[in-house]
Length: 434
RNA sequence: GGGGAGAUACCAAAGUGGCCAACUGGGGCAGACUGUAAAUCUGCUGUCGCACGACUUCGGAGGUUCGAAUCCUUCUCUCCCCA
Image (tube, rainbow, N blue to C red; front, top):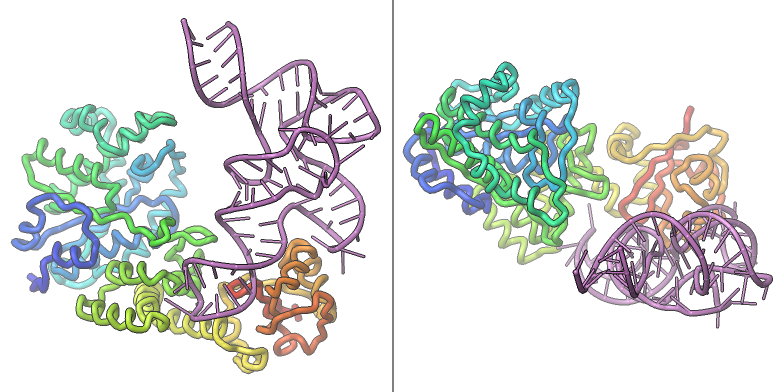
């Protein structure tokens, strides 16, 4: 068995990843190699960074010498977890679910070691496999009999839905969710000796229904460990940007945007996140935090955090490209430096940026027409005019003050591209069709 | 069932016959400052080539008036009190 450097619970504790642990879990983890699982429902065809917390728990678990089990919730995804939801959820169709499951499996495979011969090699399972042939009658006789409705109703996720002021009730389907998840735990307990289930703090109720079922059905001891809800210092929801979720799939959130997300985190959050989302050691993190507090404007923590997470989720190359792109987009680049960049690089840098194309004969035009009628970058001329008057428009990194400015072919970088900037952070790339 | 209050822009909330495209605050977008931050300060924020001007908005429909968010009728919805 692998030697365990540090007690897993202690490790998670200093990382701020423990919200609640069932008594006895720490001792168990010190005593033996434990199999533990985290479940993820396939509600989309990609994980987003909210899921990353659960993944990191598994990663730390494996690092501590235990065996992680990643459960894709093909079955539970069909029901919809009522936890944290104030309204009944719409059911997803089977085809979408199947597609999502496959996508998630591929993503999860990147984070854990599934390959080696080590005894704590990670495992991936799908609860659809053991639920699909389980008959309704069989389930309610074997499983339902052991958990009382009273017990299930006492869970926060259920209570909120039936007692809240604007309660809209909940369907029987969603009500059974915790029971299905509890059975997953029982199944893994029996099949793989899984004795620990982890998840976000909203999962506590679902997990303990599982430990309860294991106790009643098999007289077994199983444990629960949850991590706190990840928060933002400004009170907003973690992992959301203007455009929505931050996804791991590069087709949904480009590596550049992904990198930027972490780079833009506040100082306070950076200290918190670097513990949760990186594998860096305690000494390293504490040293960096101290250094960061000395010179906060250098944003050492944000840079390191963004680097670590981008490399882990995407790749070293993607990270380098994101840094390069950030330098160009936010550095002191001028029209001349832009022109000097090789075209390939130029396009890669602007990969995540909205692209617009125009015909060559539109190149000589006034910016008003070009940026509205000809391209649709701005939807009204009035809006654009106001923006220019407020000093918010730049073309090829140069501020535009005159709304009636006329462009010529020479205005285009390499006779081909025009970099339009709305404010500091919003870029649009205009290219000429050849 | 009886009585009362209300419905205004993304949200909150003024306005109660012309000075109202509608005070103000929040939010959003931009600018300055800065660390691609926070805080602060400034501008913009119904639509339209938007100085001017035009057009559409104040729960829905109709009416009075030269003129209505504002007055009248009616409908719809919300809240409160009494039974």
